[in-house]
Image 1 (cartoon, rainbow, N blue to C red):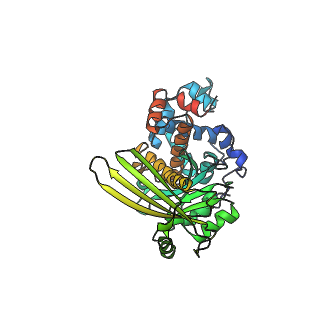
Image 2 (tube, rainbow, N blue to C red):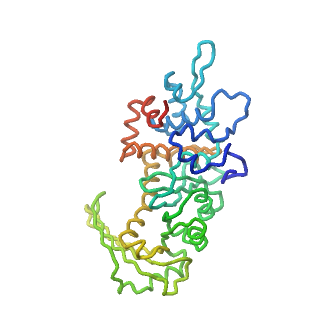
Length: 382
């Protein structure tokens, strides 16, 4: 059953083995086709591969995806699995309306799972949400998407947060299908809840590093009151880039005997950031508190600082979707279109990262130079 609805969206329950299949076409075979059996000209897999290839070539809308498909040559359509028809065995690409209809109907949770990266064995998984601002209508709020990302900016999966609720309700549903044994889950202060901490440690055998802010006033006050001046376990990092110099100080303190009331809490961390704008000389200072179930042996100040920074990778991913794919300007609103197009953008980013592209914008430009061969090569379509 789908995690987002009460409908059956998979021919088989997705497992780690399904998600580990290297070829996207074989993974997508496990999706159930939401269309009526009558009148189908194209298979679901061929339609989804066409859309994914178009997004890899730089398409940002249904219209652009349809234009890419309309101009695709016969050899590209054959690689996409488009079947020949008529007396001359001509392959006809899915129309823009067919592509739009499929992307508004296909199950978003299953599509995101099958096109995502497996988090098993990863050092960490970052969880955060993003609103597709252009999907707002007169009668409905914009789609809010909760995502999980592993180091390197590769998306694990994504779920749409139901209207009139918050990201908190989707946290366990998002991560439930995955093996998180030994993985450190990082999240911002919105997800610093006792139930989440218990579920991660007890049910998923994972670790957590959670930020503590004003939404947990008692816990935040207890962390601020800890004897930080006496702490000798600390780490300093300095770096320059993006027009600024930054110095970070990380102090950690074992709190098992200090009466901190939070499930499985072992260490607390105080992260102090100093940033200097090179152009203006403006200095900003920020203090962040975090809590984790890892011992000092499992997570040194250096490791905690690295894990805290891994949370920024999901924010960087959202930035790429906004700037490179202009997601916030997209007017895709109907049905499941906003989340499925976001999944295709995530998949394009992951595919380009796996191909060695550090800059997604540069990677999209490179694929656009050979729009009907390079994307298909990246998707390993024979």
